[in-house]
Length: 108
Image (cartoon, rainbow, N blue to C red; front, side):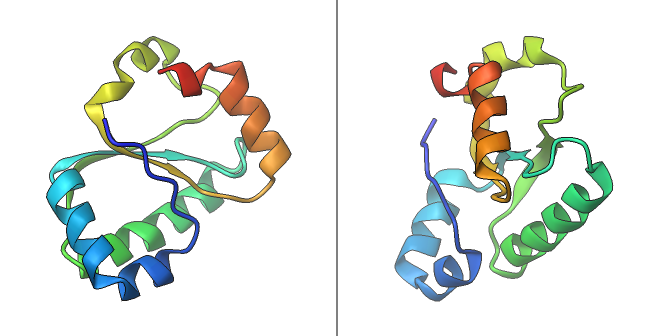
């Protein structure tokens, strides 16, 4: 698995060389969104949809998209390598970092 932290989608889209690298390394894999708000699924999925539309518009395709909520099946964390991109959605950094630490995501 390649680990890439992306904080500004618009900047990535403008950087054609990096975008092409993402297409080669990540396309046709699975995308996992780590939400900024673990409880507001509706808002998270709205943002996720907008981010995914940017990916699609730039021919960066994924075969599956999932969201890592508090009720996520944590048994799946044993197979985190199956995701080609884990996207940290931003927002409340303290809350998100606490969640990432709690579920041991960094060791996956």
